[in-house]
Each structure stands twice: as structure tokens, then as C-alpha cells.
Image (cartoon, rainbow, N blue to C red; front, side, top):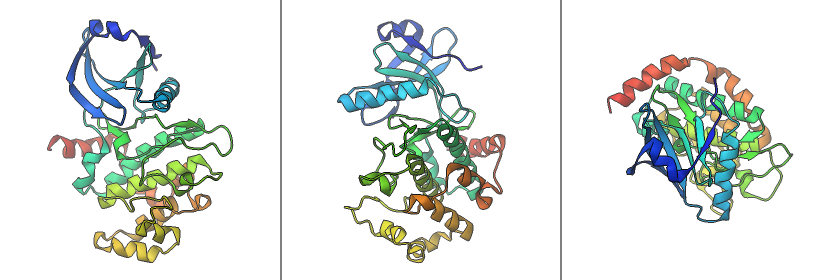
Length: 293
């Protein structure tokens, strides 16, 4: 049963939770995440505090709280509470960190597809609620104590219930090209693009390009933008990506959002959905990799 989030007085927090300001488990541009322990039963949580550097960052954090309050999905980090002053949130503790630590492990494609599928399942849930995450990247996908992948950080998320709702931010190298220019676009397709970059990074070990911004004139991105896929893939031929991976990437990373998959199409694509691990099987695989590090 989904527990309804509550509010707490930050000044009284130490009465119920053990808090060590040296036990930092994550950092963002304007936030720090600490591990805390509830005194009554020893349950571990993550406490995310923001500094409100400016009004925009205050809005982003408050938007995150508003959205998390309504979200309940097995592949989205659980939200338990927020402080009365809106400066911090209490969320699920994810002891194995984010997906960045998996990038250099040269994981089997079956494991990678299974990881990405869990993230896509969360994105499908969001898109069905007309919510766009807006900042999908390895840093924003965490690994739970049961080795389940969960999406986090909704600071740039938007409710796209109106046509041509614009994104409010994102991370360079993961942001779709249409978001960088002042034109109408489907924000949900921007999430698909970011998923493509994340998938590529997990498979190849690095991003396919540094930026899609027209002012940057990134050589690798220009190959994709101009549909010169042969030139693009030649750069990565030492990695020997198979034809199924290439074709799938081309429908996630294409410059024209109208040619990009929807989240439903991406999940159901034949090459992608074949030969995946179940949630339990993937947990067993990740347990092997992460506990031997």
C-alpha cells in the first residue's frame, strides 16, 4: 500500500532521525543528499537538501515536491516526506548509487537492455500522466538495495498537458536538439532522445556526442543531424555494435522528433524486447557485479 507523504519540521528532525552532516551520498548543482536513519526502527532514508541559489532553483525544487507527491511506481524513487519550509525531502535510500558506476564494467547487452527497460517502464508511466522527466541520464537512475533501477531527480520535470509545452532545463549531451531552439515540439520525444543517449553510454562507455546545440557544431552530432549514419558508426566500429543496436539507436537519437519512437514503440521494438532479464534475474546479475567491487 502506498504511504501518503507527510510534512516535518526541520528543526525537530533530529528527534526522530540520526543525521550526520559528513555522511554525504550525493551532490547536485544546488543540493546535497545525506543518509539518515530513523531512530525508532533503524530504517535508512536519503535526505535531499537544497540551497535555493535563486528563484528558479527554488521553483524547480518545489515542482519536484509537487510531482513526487503524486507518483507511485516501482521504478521511481519513493518519496516519503518534505519539510514544512520546502527546503528538503525525505526519499528512499539507494545504497548502490547511480548508473555511472556501471559504465566502465562492459556489461553484457542483455543486462543493459534490461536496465534501460526498467527506466523506460518508469518513463511510460510518467508519459501516461503527461509528465516529462526532462533530465534523464545515468546520474538520475539509481540502484536500490534489491538491485532495482529507479528514476530520480524531478527538478526539471514538467506537466505537458498543453501542446508544445517547453522543457525547463536538462543536461548538455543528453538534451534533444529541438529543445535548444525556440520552436514548437513534443516534450515527451525529448525524454526518448535522452534515453537513447543513456543507452548508448551504457553500451559504448561514452556519449555519442558532446552537444546537440547548433552553436557548438559538434562533429559527431552533425553526422546524425545530416543522417550520415555510416560516418557516425565508423567512429565506433572498434566496439562492434550489432545491426539491431544501430537501428534502434537511429530511432532514438534521430534529429527529427517525428521520426523518433514514442515510449510505447521503444519498449515494444523487437530487437530491444528480445532476450531481456526479468526484474528478479537482473537483480541477481547486478548483485554479482556490484557486491564484488
